[in-house]
Image (cartoon, rainbow, N blue to C red; front, top):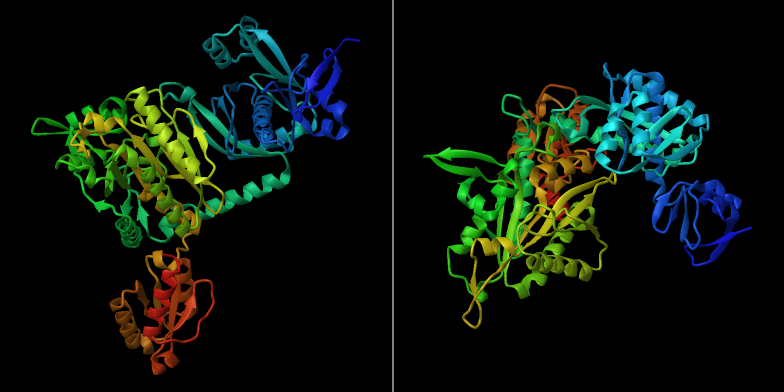
Length: 636
């Protein structure tokens, strides 16, 4: 019998008969591995268990515990869902159904939109098909044969996909009577899809083009085991409870209005106070680190945006207007004004680095379909800064920003991840400048000793960047800080400084934000804290509650003293039961309730009660002020 030699990940060799598959290899190693295996990796590429091995191949068995397993299971679950839809709704046309970060989806062309009741039926049918233990098989066909097959099945979208691929052959996966165009790999049988849940229905244009037909998209999720699925579903329920849009209404922080326009936030008094506290914090932290506060105009001449490259590379995200027959662009970024400040004087190497900071409000044309509460808006404020420095100062400045990010994330209790985003296809500047900028960012990241990923092709059009994504209490990732290294715009705007030899040199510009969009960061904070902000950040820190009308006059005096001491305070002197007032204050997530009855009025004290129900000992107004000041310092 002819044999082939296979190399395993640990470097060991194993001999198998010619024609052996990945599944055969797993079985030859052990029954336990054969049972756990769902796919394989041959010479670096993922394959099905049925893939045939070749002599000299390097092979790894992918089990349910492998990092790759989750995506394979989710992709297989999308096919299972499509099969269930076709069995329940035979007239439905299938399109595409990929695995995504949180699960999977599949788009269908149907005459009547799906309902929540349909989701229940589809999920039940998926369970039946999974229990049927249908074998999942891969078949390679010529593109002509595949088109003929899908035409016979009445699936026009598959024909379009195959024609656009422009390849001679394609792979098709079948399970039971269902067939789908797919690259794979997939689990060997439907019984390996054990834990799944259909979540929602949405509309989606075919290929994301609003000129195409509107399809019905079903979102779902799947996990290797039910325990992980249950944990995820619990996090989803918790996320709904913490939804910043819901809490924003309940806590009276902000609102949106169709009369005003989509994606434009209206800040109510408590929300505006929250913003003010955050912005004041930002100003203090920047001043401590040697930044100068600047302010630029909202509109700048179109010629400036053309010179910077924004007009060519970012125009679809901008708004334009005309004043006195002169074109202007409403700023989507703050960098141009900061470069004008730099150019207003002759700069020496002794002046550098210069760090210009602006809480700059910008406008960007976001498509209506992506707007989402505070997380994606059309008008927002960035904690934007631009550092102009000599090339030899660049490393220290990037590291300084990384340290700044670390300090601030620590204050709010966030962990974070970092990515180095490299040159996109649509970009300006020389290869040399991009190489230098990328090298500078990479070097600072490597010296930090913290892990980072490479995000190919996702840099800004004028330079590479470090993207920093924080993790909230539900383990969700949010984009916040960015650090962009730019050799190009200083050249386009002819920025110079005089070096120690009297020669004119070109500075480097670092674009950076720490929190990013103030609106987005507040949305993240609301969900992270579930509206229970730390005392120093709470728009209302305490509320005075009287037991009866007898204490109203004393309550007003306490309110006046606390307000004069800088405490953010409210009063509730209504003739209502104390328990009712406490409940309302708790729903508003006010940190402290200061209860005043006859006893407190006679002794000149208040009795603080924390929002979780814990009571403190009675204290004077001065003692409470000191208590608040001390507790607030713990968070700053």
